[in-house]
Image (cartoon, rainbow, N blue to C red; front, side, top):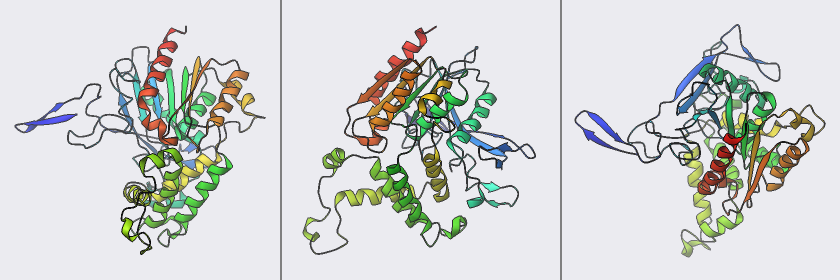
Length: 392
């Protein structure tokens, strides 16, 4: 998208396939005394949801596609907020006229998840009972809570039936839970680089990140608002997390063993390999945009999620799913949510005679492939949604 000034009013020139200028909207519900009852029995309210919509809801109110974002993304999935924005939404390559999620056909919704810090209620939000940020008084939340709250948003928007719930990484867990909680409302789910539960490896990695934040002298047991935030701890947590999004092959291709100052490699301890500088740069950007408490809460919600909770196994749990079709996609170099976890999902689908498509995509990018392999995903998703239209 580009803009050209004409007098006092900017004329917006929209790039081909763009949804154009988009406004983030907000919906608040569950006002006291009718607070929302969370999965663990605690109550929360009022709850505000930040969300964006692209395309139009049809007359039968059944053409909605719900985009579930990953750990630290936002509701801003496509388009731009202002003509001079440097970057569009985080999945702009996939959402818009003629794209994988074609806004000429579908009513696309993306909401910021409960517990985040991009407009939805989370630890950094003001607790109306105290007039101060919740901090660690914010109740522990899970993936199921995020989905149940989103259900209220779809009701508010008038959606009767959801054509597809789409999620990469943590977003895939939300998509699974949608199909389990509201089977009669969900026609299909699209799971990309996701899993039905966290592995011990993933939980262990999260533990190191959580400990880095909590050991930061500025963390102050989560009560740092209005003070110096625990940026050093959050930066370390992000560097650790960012490594899990990459792959050995991609790191060799992108950085190798190159050094920012080869002459100083054996003389100064603070001399850096390029990969070290890259991680420092990424973490310095992250601490400016994300809340440390939200990071803790959301990582913990991933740790505790298990799609088979309350059932003997995943196959028994998936007996609740009534989707017409399911798309599962994994990536060859993803070691955060390796392909075998997608194959566990496929096995449970097979056991329940649920129609599915499974694709293991060869990619060197690692877990981040779900954001970077947009051409391969566009082909896969377009064919899947087209085939879904043909199912009576």
